Length: 201
Length: 201
Image 1 (spheres, chains in turn yellow, brown):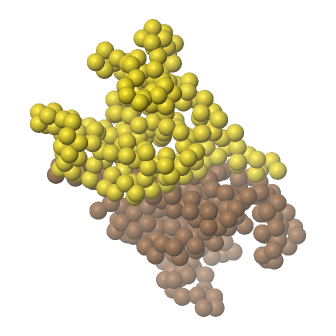
Image 2 (cartoon, chains in turn cyan, brown):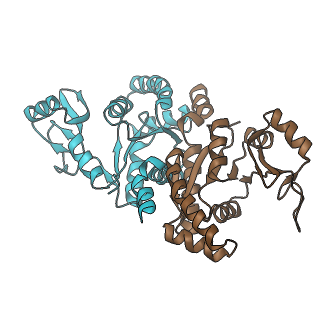
């Protein structure tokens, strides 16, 4: 059985990672979105195993000790992490898994799982990024300035990724991610079984 | 200006390289097929600069000395070679160039131009390959046996390529090559100009 791909979609806040991942999954039912573990309480209509795996701090910390996360971070006293065992279980079954994550997290995942496919989502321009962040209405003026400074720095991390796609139009950006998945599936080193079975029959 | 790609399509005789390249170019007018140089005389309706560049042995040998070929070979006393200057001229203009070539030639091109995108075309099975070679009607029984032995050996070279695609259906195999081209164009290291211009504006 050929393994599935771990596709890591990352980039600065406001670049549109979430929108691209949602559209990718809408088009491709067979791709699974990685669900994070967290120690924070569920909010509103959040469902365990759908939005997050809600686990206790004790359990989270014991899993950290077992090296059970591809990456994790602590935000405002709560843990968030990508469960390695869940991701590897799907990949071993041949399922492609998509992981939407910030840049720091993506770089940690790369250390743990260098076979992943690392895609950096670029905004068409910093001006456009600023407009997107502003129009979300969730950030103060100061916070926006900080985010923009941060984005400027973060763009230089794009070179640490396998691919960098400009998110100008959602449709064409998702077309590119789909092309990347097809190409990666056809990498010679991922076709060993196919090549050997053609030779042997 | 972002450089074009050199896409090297290679594989055993009978795998269908030629058919795939023709269909790829039919769909994508902007992709150029690399035209070889040869010292043999034009046959039938062959046109200089379309089917081949027909040049003298003297010129060919002086170009060999100048390291002007990405690869060359001598077959039945005639030289055949891929003109490096023509290919690089197009690539520098941002044009994607496709090169259909046997395995030995492809491996030489890889030494000269490792930035190329190397695609190995696999037959769906050796049985299917045998049927395709037989139905061409150009080979004797002995020649077919030799070709099949050769193909068995050649398949192991697929691992030296970036990609290996099964040519089961022409349409889907060309879809895969198109996806590979899109993915390669979006490699982070090919997006330096885009990333830097987003940062600077």
